[in-house]
Amino acid sequence: ADPTLTLLRRYHKTSNHPGRSLVFDTKPQSLPDHVGMSNGKNLASARQLLDGAVAAIENARRLVSDAKKLRNSGSAPTGYALAVLAMEEASKAFSWVITAKSAATNEQTIEVPSEGHPQRLLRVQLVLETMRQHFHETSSTSEKELIQRAIELARIDNLAKQRGFYVDLKNGHVQDPNEIQPDAASEICETAEGIIGLAMIGMIYPNSRVSD
Image 1 (cartoon, rainbow, N blue to C red):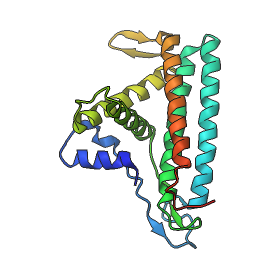
Image 2 (spheres, rainbow, N blue to C red):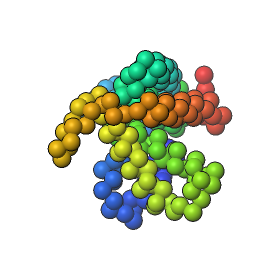
Image 3 (cartoon, rainbow, N blue to C red):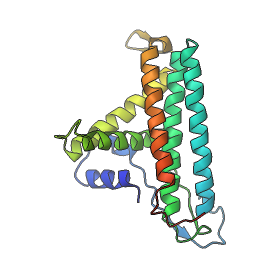
Image 4 (cartoon, helix red, strand yellow):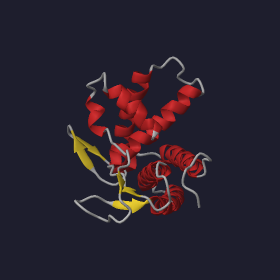
């Protein structure tokens, strides 16, 4: 199972945090191999999920490359937004790999996880926060605090992505994409590259039950 989901499910048993609307469920539903798209469900074989994950990783790498080019050419806001999109793509790949690995065979048909942008960013932040705690940056942080922080950071990333594209008006203040500085774009590009790397590691993790 997706380890980030395990954290979230345990958290939401004892919390009414408003972020619970971000909860997502990628638990695969096993279905007969002959069943295709039905009842609005998006179905695929484990092999197809892995193929999709590879394509998502390649797309995430392209998005980061484009983000860097935009940052270097003076368009940091759009570069920032593209880097956040790259993290979402890498998160999608991770979700698809985890789901595919739960299958008994390459050809087993399972439901493709359905997630929104906030859910994918939440997975990213849960992974990052767990790593920070592991490396003692936040060693005193409780599991509940870790998840609350991840929820808030995912919300901020999602809003920042939109700010990279759109002008908005909040409480009489015009929010211009150009308020996003090059240093911020550089930092988010580095984070996106790290998340892509983690997703690639997940794809080759040796405990997979799906072989080539």
